[in-house]
Amino acid sequence: MLLFRSEEHIDRWSQARDLPRGATLTPEQGWRLAHGWYKDKVKPDWRRHTLEETEALLREVGLTGPFWNLRDA
Amino acid sequence: MSTSGSPNAEELAREVRLYVFRQAAETARVPQAPEIAAALHRSEADVVGAVKQLATGKVLILAPNDGNIWAANPFCAVPSCFRVQVGDKTYSGICIWDALGICAALGHDAVISAPCGDCGDPMRLEIRQSRLAHSEGIIHFAVPAHHWWDNIGFT
Image (cartoon, rainbow over all chains, first blue to last red; front, side, top):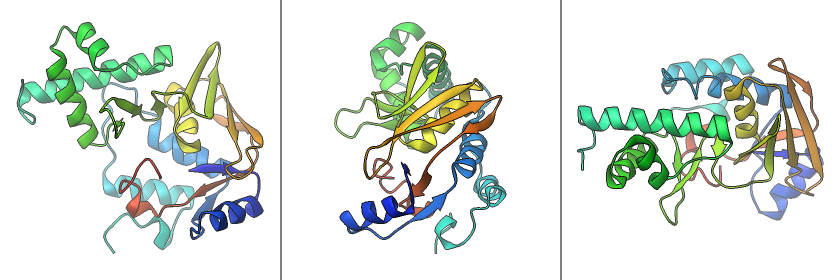
């Protein structure tokens, strides 16, 4: 997951590597996703999120659609 | 050596997890097996087994070449271009998500510096009181979520 100056820079990066464009997040969405994902990681009682919890987090951050599907197609 | 999955192995994996992440958070440096073994008074072979168990459980990520811990994610064990400054400590993340994750895991105000993935232009994000106080740029995920762990290094 990389940070880019603008959409144009993402296009240029993708084209240079012959890769399809992925999905974009605002930094605010990135922060909310990272916060939900990692805020407890150092705590003794940390555990991995369940699939359902991860799906709920993605939805809360506004990340929906096929790109964010975590289950087998 | 303990058998992976046994109660003893589970307990050791927990001890190793707590030590690795506590050290990473407190020192900005991710410890490797010899240091972990010495600190926990365990054999290095047992610790290597526990680290592998944690990697299998996607708790941390091993380097593909030497089996060392590459990232106790969000904390990267080697310097990267995704830097997180917290007071006088500088942390590294393997990507912008993990750089933000370091701020979340530590719960402290922090400044992230990261280059544009295309042109290398430096950018800055700032977390204050658990809020994104300053930002620039756009985050791009190249890999669909279902395939993140197919090649986590690329992801």
